[in-house]
Length: 73
Image (cartoon, rainbow, N blue to C red):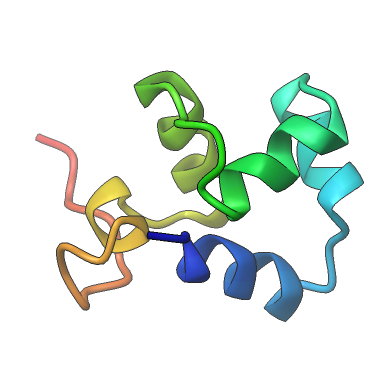
């Protein structure tokens, strides 16, 4: 399974794979492999991507259609 939401968010925000990779302190090939589900992301990386786009990990993974992150307690 690929991560289409992650790719779509990046493209919708006019960002390159290199720009996101730089924000995550990883190389572009690693990030591209995440988008194409060749490599598994660590939970920490998934959380960082959710933070970059101000959404929830559940939304990124397709577990919910609610884009807004859960409220903090």
